[in-house]
Amino acid sequence: MTEATPSLSPLVLAPTLLVMGKGGVGKTTMAASLAVLEAQLRGRAVLVEFGDGESGRRALGAGRDGRSEGVGVEHVVIHADEAIHRGSTPLFGSSTLAKLALDNFAMRPLLRAAPAIREIAMLESVRQVAAERPGVRVVVDMPATGHGVAWLRTARQGRAFLGSGPLFDLCDRVARELVAPGRASPIVVTLPERLVLEETLELCASIARDPGLPVAAIIVNRVPRAFGADAMRETRALHAASPGGGAGALLALLESRAAASLEAARILEGLGGGSGKLGPSTLWTVPLYPTDPTVATVARVLREQGYP
Image 1 (cartoon, rainbow, N blue to C red):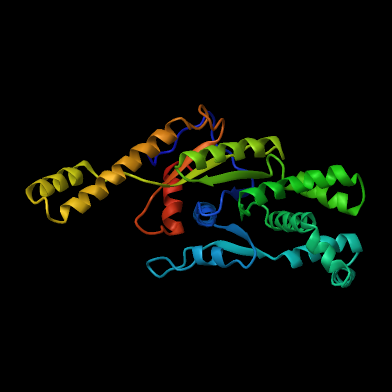
Image 2: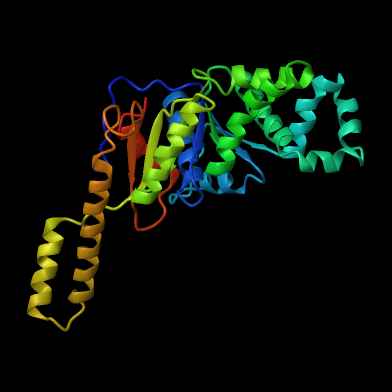
């Protein structure tokens, strides 16, 4: 079940990967794992995170052997205020004037009330990160589903609304150089649950329509795998020999896992990358582990499934 489903053509990824998904699906772990895998394959990679950066730092921290998981990965944390200052500098002609204007008491409430300004500034910072590191793959841990999609539409909407001017130029630059086919590839993280997968397919279709980015791959995380047939057979024999012993609880666990594994297989069966509901998107699966896997473990799983 953890083998890759082949698509109709080889997967070609853009320089920037936009990792998306609902909260709680393991999106940050997958983003960090992709960055680690890129660093393993090509020597360098960048993981971009918004906010305080703690989630990414934890994911890239020491592995179970005590060594850092993030060798070769540059972790860039983008803060909204700093992004707005950087993005506004061309509008005001200098960094000093931008800071004076944006720190004005009358401007601060306006910026808080206009999330689109923050969003386009954050995306402009991502664009700058990618432009300053040619040849290095940039992996972006995007906000959770609803906000992430809204972010991707901001540049196009701002460009259409403004028509001209410095802010139009900013939106146009982000739309052309970041949120565009060949510049960025969305990768969506999901779970092997029927409702969640249906929402994922809707998300993929929505992103393909607007802003027009085809989803490159879907990662189905925490896919349950049945234990071996020998374990089930031996546990049943133990339970039959001693019905009142602890083998009964173990047997219930094994049977529950087997049922969950079968249900996951049924759910995934119709999602064949390139020929099923996913369209041209590639499908990767990451198994359910007893404890949270390290990013190096996930990177190995993705590499075994043909990550390009």
